[in-house]
Image (cartoon, rainbow, N blue to C red; front, top):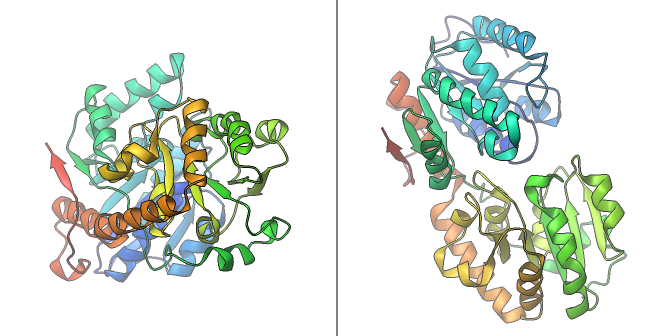
Amino acid sequence: MHLSATDPRPRVLHLTQPVDGGVARVVTDLVRAQLAAGLAVTVACPDGTLITRLRTLGADVRHWHATRSPGPSLVREVRHLAHVIDEVRPDLVHAHSAKAGLAGRLAVRGRIPTVFQPHAWSFEAIGGVTSALALAWERWGARWASRVVCVSEAERTTGVCAGISGRWSVIPNGVDLQRFHPAPVDTARARLKPLREVDPAAPLVVCVGRLCRQKGQDVLLKAWSAVAHRVPGARLVLVGDGPDRDRLRARAPKSVLFAGAVADAVPWYQAADLVVLPSRWEGMALAPLEAMACGRPVVITDVDGARESLPPSLARRCLVPPENPAVLAGAVAELLLAPLLRESLGNQGLRYVLSTHDVRHTAEAVTHVYRDLIGLRPATRVAPTEHRESIHS
């Protein structure tokens, strides 16, 4: 599908790099909702399964060859985006994550209403000179963002405290509740080939996320020996792929399985007795929300963007300090040994996600931002629902 200059529908151009993990899921959910709402949606992104998924939804997808991090190819990447923008002639550009936010804002430079959604600040993910350069850019580039959309209040606060100015919207991530839902554990485990050789009664911990320093799987592996000692037979599954895969495999005991990248994480959540996210930092973690939508209890680290995933009532049992293997091991083992408590926590988490993190609420809140920036006609809106958007001037 190619857009025509005479197409009366409001035209939105999403820019994204990366094309995997939580960012890809957010983009997919937004595109699906916006197409259903009557917008003409184009996405520019690098090669990957995301392109196929978006085209299946009916989106116009343009290939944008871009590396994950800034480098010598940036000038070429910006020129390519400028060409795409000239072709698509969008009414609004929505750039996701640091790399697309950098290249997109350089290509547009304020000529078109632009939404920037960092999905966690890049200057938090790196150190030294590179971090200082990233922060300097974010301060400068903010002038070319009509709105900065943060997925958590903590993310917005971090930006403000770092000296980044602009108009802010806080729109928490949402979950597709038709896709992420509870199911019997035994049914879910039977669907997963890597678990067919595992004792069906074995306590199972699942960690879903890119295998990288941010997600903290190395901390979980340090904690795992203590968990396995207290809970004999327990198994840990790391779902995902990434730059730390080989290093993590080299230090993992036999009770740890590596599932690799998967097209659908739902059965892994449903198969788990407990889902763990030991992140060092987050924008707003999707994995705990998805796990709770599947009725599974979670243990997550007390970092910005993760703690806001939990209802306050679960913090005492489910929130642990980051980079503390001993405390993490104690929390995981305690819950594996308490099936009734796990069931209660899972039910509480499910009710919380159902009431506050439905992806339809998120899509409506984003549409509200678009409407404010380009005056969308009421006919293009998603069906009204309650949402948790807050705008800070």
